[in-house]
Length: 393
Ligand code: TGC
Ligand code: FAD
Image (cartoon, rainbow, N blue to C red; front, top):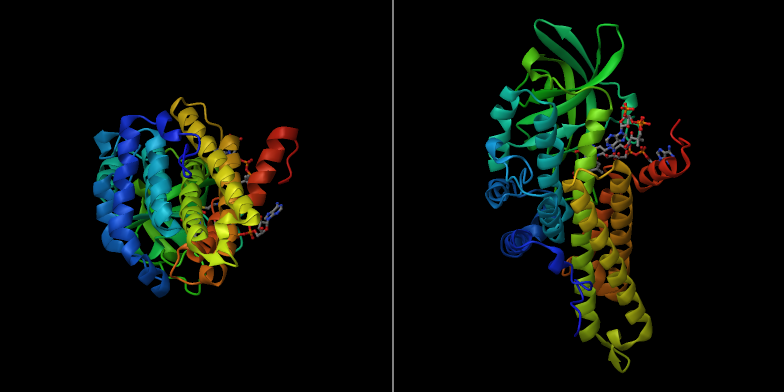
């Protein structure tokens, strides 16, 4: 075989020794520690919380955060490869790590005070504290700028009221970053980020039930009813919708890599199966139609790998744009979902069982295609960039 079917363009040659080592280490952890238990958790609708400190020890929590705050001080391709390997296990595992790294540690690092950074970042990097990110509301998903959650100034602090929904890690988080509207000195509403610790009065975090997707992940509501927090819990440098959107750009970058992991798991499974499953006179992989499907999967994985790798290099050079991230998130997740469906087809009836990981990945990818900006939202973001005409108004 002249080419590795999972790395057709020899991408590993574009990685540094450190990047390769990070990838191998996380891959081993997923194979040895996570995959043996994922079926149990997916069936029960639970997340293996005891693995969170292990993710910390592996460096998967805040890998790009500077070492002075307990982070890994690594580059963006390392972060991407971690996301890829975690999601090869399950999107729920990658979600737990990417929320912590990109949606909680990143805003604390970027918009937080020195005290907030020292208080939370080292513990979060170790996985001894967990965070969540509350932006979406029941009536404001794709359009978070319309959020209803509000803060008002009271008793040297703020009183928060509102409901956030679909919040990953909400029920297990020690602290939530809650985005809410606060009037400025001129009475104009400005979206600000607030740190709300789990024990605050007036703060409930009920678990959401009934998901067919991302079952091995905690998803919760955050309910704030006259919840008072002190002045020092405001993220002082946050301001306007741009702040949470900047966080989303970080997370979407990681998701573009993560989706490749899920796609690889499905594709490798289908490729193996096609060589051993005999129907009519030969292994089904010997039929032209099946080969065409396998080649289509491999081609899309190869393109996705190159997109994310290039994006990572641009990110480290400080040249990555949100629109480039939209393209990679939209393309890679949508292609991964298509690959999962095709892989399921190649396995026939066996493909719908939990003896194989495909259906689990397929169901997960339905969420991944929706959260962090739906496929439509990224398409419209790109359409706006190309034409200069804003479809969101
Ligand atoms: P718009 O006028 O476009 O933007 C307002 C300001 O923000 C800037 N901006 C961005 N900055 C950084 N990164 C981005 N991706 C940015 N997008 C926009 C923009 O330049 C502007 O700046 P300024 O200086 O002019 O003020 O705002 P809009 O209201 O028109 O909304 C645009 C839209 C629809 C693209 C945005 O609202 C959007 O992205 N909607 C999708 C919502 C979303 O993705 N929610 C995700 C929730 S979190 C989640 O799903 C976590 S899942 C985690 C897991 O389990 O892994
Ligand atoms: P809607 O915005 O109601 O969209 C419904 C449909 O309408 C979609 O197809 C969409 O593309 C389409 N649509 C919307 N507007 C337009 C338009 N202008 N033009 C064309 N089509 C349009 N959020 C958080 O804040 N934190 C989290 O940790 C988090 N974790 C999540 C975990 C899970 C398991 C899930 C499922 C979601 C999570 N989310 C989280 C929420 C997620 O970000 C939202 O679901 C997502 O942004 C879409 O919002 P919505 O579900 O309200 O869909």
